[in-house]
Length: 397
Image 1 (cartoon, rainbow, N blue to C red):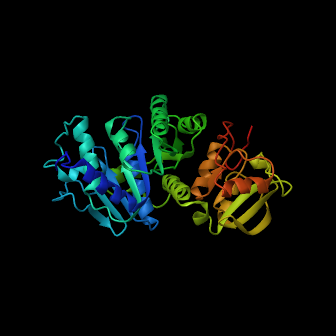
Image 2 (cartoon, helix red, strand yellow):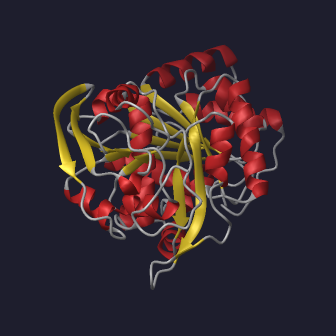
């Protein structure tokens, strides 16, 4: 492929026409390499397609295009830029790797050539009408991220991928600041490799610590989208070209990924679309205010929502506070979200297994918190309690 445009003005028109056909544009970036950014891009795109969305993936990591390998199409060659590679009815992908004679050949280009290549991938490819374009960026804040930010048009937001170590957190802050500098909304931070889940006993071990991504999100006033633990299956899925969210479809890591995808749909398509028949539970002792000590509540106020409309409200007595019982109890009641003051990390993990989102930092009147949440104004403002609570017991101290 040529990396130069014969007529930049005509190319600008083609890019605009292409991008106008795409409803939502998301860029996945990281401050440093090796944090699993391409893994997140692949699983997010594949998950969105499984949710019935028409999705395109642009592999904009020109020097290290890994998306084809993770989708099982490494080595595929396309004859021209006209059509992307179609993986399913809902998913298509374009990568510079498709146009190289040998995938092992390095790309030795300066800035202008890289800028030209990205503009061609955006303007000359017939992306068609899409619900989402997911752009996988290289690490850092150089030519490729800047070109994407200046060329895509309206971007719904950037997703910053980090790992819990201090060095990764430091670099993720730079990605947040970069997004704000180029007027690109930050959709949120994802903490990847947040613990390792043993394949034999399901015990979680925090190899790289945990909570750094959530702390950075809180300090920089951006949303925290979730913690994705490492599993042996996720590593194998990436190497085998079978996205984990498609091949596994169960377990803590799957539920965490699915929660991130649900958050993306919620943020891009509006609360109303994702709140049809949503069940939200508040811990309470009097039916009116949020009980800050989750493990001590006497009742749950459970709301069934249709967008912002309350379809029903019921008070349900809490079961005995035994380890692990509350997540299972609310899961059986088909609760989707619990809004509370605080909660221990172990309890959060158990709710994640039940596919229940946890919103922290709520206080005061239940109706006020519900109004904030359905209006998109309430997100996790607290943090997981550091006390060594048992399963299902948590606090906001």
